[in-house]
Length: 376
Image (cartoon, rainbow, N blue to C red; front, side):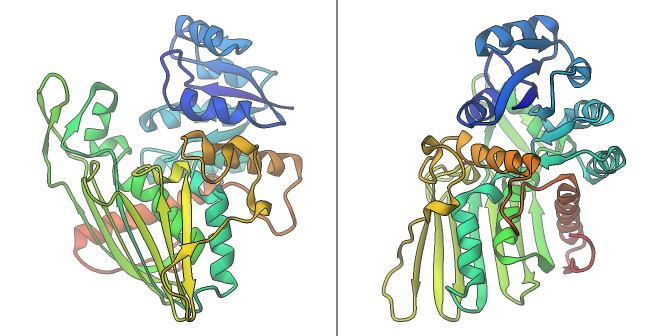
C-alpha cells in the first residue's frame, strides 16, 4: 500500500475533500494515512470527519512521519513553496496540485530540490491522464485526421468573472500565481500540447478588462490586477496553426469547444463539466473521408485505468484525479506498460510555467515570441 498524507484536507470541504479523498477511496493500492491542516484543532476535526488515523497541525510534522510515503499538497497556490519544500527535504515522494509555484522561480526551486533529493514527483495536470485525451493523442498519431492543419480551443475560466467571494478573493491579485492564465488556460494548453505537440512560436493578448469586481453578497467593489482575457495564436512544432481564447467568468453561450482539423478528418472535443472541463466528462466526435457530420467516438476499454465509477463519461471533479492517481500508482510500483508515460513531474511543471511566462512576455511586448528550443 502507498501510504498517503494530504496537506490541506479540511473538515469544511475544499478541493482535497471534493476530489482527492474520493479518488483515493476508489482505487486499490492507496491508504489515506495522514493529513495536516493549519492548526492542530482543525486537523483533528478533519481526521474525525474523514476517518484518517494521523492528523498533524503542520506540514512539517506530516512530512517527518515514517507512516507517510507520498505527500499530497492541495492548498492554495501562494502556499505551495512553503508546504512542498518540507516534504522534499524529508525525502518523500510529492504530488502537488497545479500550478506548482506562484511563479517560474518558485517552480524551479522546488524542481531543483526534488532533483537533488532524488525523489519521485507529480503535478496535478490531470487532463493528461484522461482516457479520452490519451485516446485522442493516439488517434492523431495514427493518422485519423491526416496531417493536422489547425486546432482551435474556446474556453472559460469560471474564475476572473464580474464577481468574487471570500474563498476566491486571493485570485484578484495577479501575484498570487492563481489566475486565468495559470489555471484554466494552463490546464488547457497542457492538454492541447499533450495531444498535438508543443508550440514553436506564439503571439498573445493577456488583458484585464474588469479592473474592478463586486463581492457576491456584500456588494463591495474590489480592485483586480489579474487578467480576465487570454488569447494566444501560434504555430505548433508540427507546423499546424493553433488558436486558444479563454475568457473570465462563465458565459451564457459556449463554455468549452475544441476542434482539431486535418487533411483527412476532423475531431471535436466537448465537455459536460464546463468551464472546468479538465475534471472529466469529455466526449470525442469525429468524421473523416466521405463521412458526414461528426459522430461520437467511443473510448476503448484499454484506456480505462481506474474503477468503474470513474469512467470517462463521469463529470465529477474526482474523475481525472482518480485516473492520475492510477497512473501514479503504477509508476511508483513499476507497473506502467512499456512506452507508457506516467504523470507529469516537477520538471514538466517548470517547462509549463516557462511557457506561460513567455506568453506573458509576448503579450507585454506585443510581438511574436519563439518558444522552440527554450524549454517551453
